[in-house]
Image (cartoon, rainbow, N blue to C red):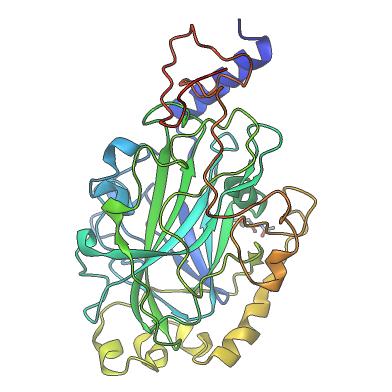
Length: 382
Ligand SMILES: *[C@@H]1O[C@H](CO)[C@@H](O)[C@H](O)[C@H]1NC(C)=O
């Protein structure tokens, strides 16, 4: 029999899943400039919504995309997503601060970021089903010693419901879709229980290098049986494999911090200017005050990065800000978590106690219960 506490958890999970408690990305901040996202609370009801850097989507119900849709177009940039009408300008090596309006604590799971190159015509007209995404950031399980664990999503909440991601300094300049995603795992112990919340933004990346990392189509990022998708988080976990491809070369999951807004910026539209002058485009292409501020060299971008300030309240644990389980090489992120965070390549352990209904805690293996052993690697229980 479930205890009262467990019943409370069950109720909370059920409630969170059905009540509109999920969040949306309100805006992104690049070197102090805030670019509005797709405002799902108002834009769908406007005759002429403004052109912003955020892709449109129809998830006005605060819903998610589930594993049954992993091979469909909705997984790319959320439900029935269409291209953003504009883009934000960012120098390679700079950081993008992605601000959600809220995120429920119960919806624990990894935070992941990808880029996909749209080509010279830009991302406003790109065919989303052809985009090839490469991973630039991932933070999964931070501490699994006490179920349901501390996750990237908890770090996002602690960072004022926001996430800081670095655009790899090595990638070639051009137009990219930034695919930012939280995967909620509170029901992921059962088949098709994971909940993906992707959000996309158009970026024009300036400066940088020449790298063009190989990517995979959005429809090929995940499968329903991935170790990081079908997983029961209501038991102690020693490792967790963030789903999707490995981090691209040159990509690093950086320490989470706040990024102060100093001005609003309007999304730039069109690709003509950038096509004419791909490397030094920002000053030309930007129609807002961004032109003044956007760094055009790596040197200035480093200086600009100091506008980010670490938030006092950030750490979910008492450890320094980020504890990516990746093999992140940045000095700021390496020192902390080595012991509890074996490797990105380790496959999640498969304790025999996994049962299908996720909220069921790790009590006694419930073999007589209705939960089928849905985890593919669970062969026998002891
Ligand atoms: C947290 O984010 C909100 C907007 O989402 C902002 O108004 C507020 O100032 C932020 N708080 C801090 C401490 O940065």
